[in-house]
Length: 278
Image 1: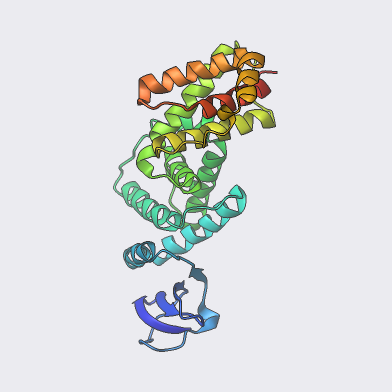
Image 2 (image 1 turned 180 degrees about the vertical axis):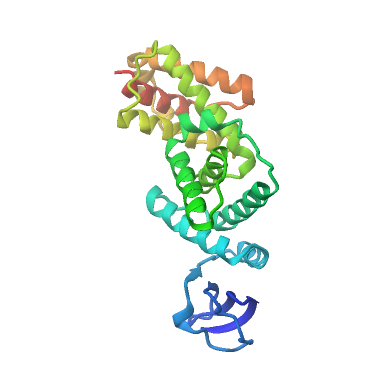
C-alpha cells in the first residue's frame, strides 16, 4: 500500500492493491514518510474501511483534530459495539463517536456536565444500547483515566441507536419518545399484565423502533396485508381488542407527531400486541 497523504505521525491515507483509498492508523506510521512511500505493515493497527467519499473526508478531518489515543480507543469501541449488536452499523459511527468522546473529555476537564433528559426513556426502550454506552464509559475510565458522568452513557447510546437505525441524531429524541409512549399505552391497555421478559416483547419493541424510524423518514410499509380482504377482516375481527390498542397508538402518534400509521402498520401492530398480551 502506497501513501497518498500523511495526516499526522500516526495516520495516513493510502491506495491499496485494488487502487482504493483507505485510511490507516498506527503509532508512528506516518513519521518520516512522504508521498509514494510504502506503508510499514508491522505498524498498522487499524484500517478504516469507509466506502463513502464524503464520510471519508469527514473522517480525515476528524482524525487530524482528535488525539490519537482517543481515535484508537473509539475504533476499538466501535468494533466491540459491532460485534455485540449483530447489525450493520452506519459507517459514520466512528466519526460521531470519536468526536463526542473528545468533546465529553474536554467538557470534563473544564468542569462542565450535561444531564441527559432521555435517560429513563433510553433505559426503557433501548436497554441494549445503554448497556453498550456504559461499557464505553467504563473503557474511557480504564484506558484514558477520565471518569465521565453516568448520563454520558445515554448520549453514547444515542449515537449507537442512530448508527443501528441509520437515522440522524436529531430524530433520536422523537423516536425514543414515540417508542416509550407506545409501550406505555400497551402496558396501560392490558392493565400492566404484559410479560416484558419475553422474546415476543423484545420483538414488539424492535418493531416500534423501526416503525418510528419509518415515520420520521417518511417511509411506509408497502400495503400488502391490507390489500387482502380476508387477512384484513380476520385481523380486525379475531384481534379486535388488539387492533383497538393499535388504534390508541395511532391516535397518539397523529396528535403528538402529526404522522399517520398506514393500515398495514396497524395490522402488524395488532399481531405483535396479540403475542405480547398472553
